[in-house]
Image 1 (cartoon, rainbow over the protein chains, first blue to last red):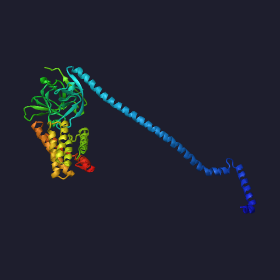
Image 2: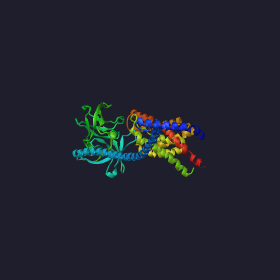
Image 3: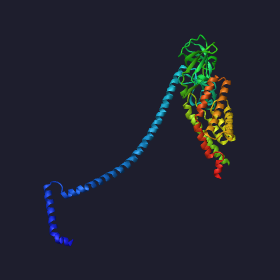
Length: 279
Length: 174
């Protein structure tokens, strides 16, 4: 090195002076940054950018983490709120439905002041293809008895109580084969017998049997309970005539009746605990 | 087998039965097929008898029958006696003749449902419930729709039997 500078020292010094002069001249000519600084800046720029990016990323990651936790808590809170509101909405819907039923019942009570009603809830349908019945939420503890009629909020016949427990009762629906009561056609006053029929039960229909041969029934005629015998109340709407047929004996006719009460979707029904007998 | 093992075993069978009952009472009745709902409790009793044999099958059949009498309408005690006999017959069949395969179970279940539906039709005719044609139609639909669930019942009770059936619990603890 010593030898190198000894033999080339002057040359190196000249080159250095020359470079310094060139830098000076260039810096004077080119306005702006120092070329050396420019070179260093250019070379280091990507590294600085990378550094800034890393810094920004780490800041964002920190923020994200904090934000995520916050958002997760927020989502959980909102989910709980939503769930509570949904529950309230469901309760509200049930209350509206119940209210509607009670409003209809009020009309019915005003119209049929002779009936003493007990509100009951349908808890289950009977698990059988051989019977059409439902279980309701009250029994002998509320004065329910076998043979009492059950109606919906509109006063349409649902069925008859067939079995009573302490806090439950079984109600045979109007289409069950166990149903047998006096019926009449509202338009013509033709009296007949309302009875369940097994093959019609599977279709959700019942029979109005022993109609006189000269009975002039048409599809859509309203069928009511006749109340004859005083066992069941009179004037409860059972359903509408769907079709009229000749009995196999040929002596009488029978009508197929579609129940007016929606027997497949019963929720709240009313047991008629007592009624005024119409002579 | 110790009493503890017995209790453990029959509790598991009862649990499987409760699962079947829940499925039938809470789910299947809402979706009737061709207007009928299936009857699964007798088939569950047959499944247990099929694995456990005639004696235990009959005892289990009595328990299932009491439950069935409580939930299905019909002649009081009819289901208790009927399902007990089904258990006895299915257990005897699997012990002495029918192979313990799915087909064997299907055969026993089919025979049990056939007998049950026949009794129902006869009872329906005697009590003037409906015409033979109408009763027979419902009986056939009910039996066939119920048998459609044997591919679910067979593996369920086979699984329970595989875990705790026979003397397995005692053998495992020896």
